[in-house]
Amino acid sequence: MRRSVGAIFLVTLLAQVPLATGAQDNAVILPLDEAIYRAMQANHHIQSLQAGAKAKDDRAQSEKNRWLGELMLNGGVTVRDEDTLIRPITQNMLMQGPANMPFDDQYAFWSLDYRLPIYGGGSVSGTRESAQLTASASSLATRRAILGVRHQVLVAYVDILSLDAQMAAWQAQKEALDSLVGHIEMGREAGKYSRVDLLKTKVEQQNVTMKAQSLKLGRETRYAALVALLGENQSAAAQYELVPVGDSGLEFDLPPATALVDSALTNRGDLKAMKDMAAAQRANASVVGGSRLPQVSIGGNLSGSHGGTIDFDDTYWSVSALVSIPLLDMGRRKNLSSTAHMTARSAEYDVLDMEGKIRAEVTASIAAVDNAKSNIATQQTTLELATEVGRLEQLRYDTGRGDIDNLLKSKSGQSMAEASLAEARHNLLIALNSLQLTIEGECR
Image (cartoon, rainbow, N blue to C red):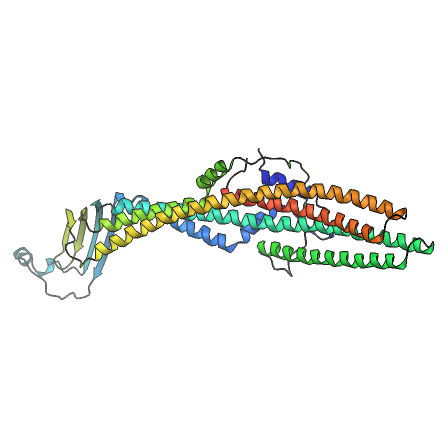
């Protein structure tokens, strides 16, 4: 199975991210896929959209076979206690005598009615088409929302790992400064270093500690955001350990911009939903317009009855045709038809506007990916240079040819370069995933 570029970048980033906070004994391992799954299950907005989509799909199914007509069964029983009620008496009844007269105090009836629409000016087919398109649009909107939640979880998850990487870089800087402080203190006893060298190093220690604390607070904020996406209460949530996964594959080339734009215009669920809603508005306009035309239907009836005052017992049937012609409604149907057509036209313009916005979004996302790739290369070069500068400044200081300011500056620059490289990898992953969300497809 082919792996997406986003997945390759994710695992590459995770492979280079040691957890600065350290795993706790009671921590629950939480892979990215599991986090996304939990967020989907806990998201009430998605649940609402799914329920709404199911309701619209059920309505579309109910409209699907409307052209087959409708069959109804009716029935009932009437009971009277008026045994002495005077009823119509025929000559035959009179000749048979009072004992044989049909004083029946119960009456039962039943009927089967069938009604089939023949012509309604497109109202039947238009209603069916409108319901189907509305259901399709609702399903597409749900899919788009699911992709959005997936992106939110990925951003929060990788943000935490990126901050862990930056914290690890600054922790390494702090450990180097701790070692340098010990080195200077030993050198002072031999008269090699001055007290000011020691004080400057300790000041840099405090700066690094403050930076690490700032990153830690940022991590706690992003961790709280991830827990909220999982639908858990922050105070009651388990402590999760995010999972680094080793892999490679940093090198890739994006397809041409025109191909990505075409992919977005073809795949975007929100654009498809908007097109479906525009088509549903056109179908609704035909339904409203059809209300100005004659309505034709045929019906059939099969009935039976038994009992009653004359002991009636019979079964009979009938067939009817109904034609309804609207003559005068003071312009109400005409105005409704005009409103429906203008609403449909407005929806079509909304589709064109959305297509223009999508083109702009894809262009911006491509630029963000290109900039992030360029920034990684820059930060990688910067780190290599900063590492070499730090090595040379350490050598100069150890041999008495350098000063503490240059050494501390080089060490700080090296740690900043390491943290910036980790952040650059994170930014590239987010930019790439944003591009995938923008086109709702693969980037290669």
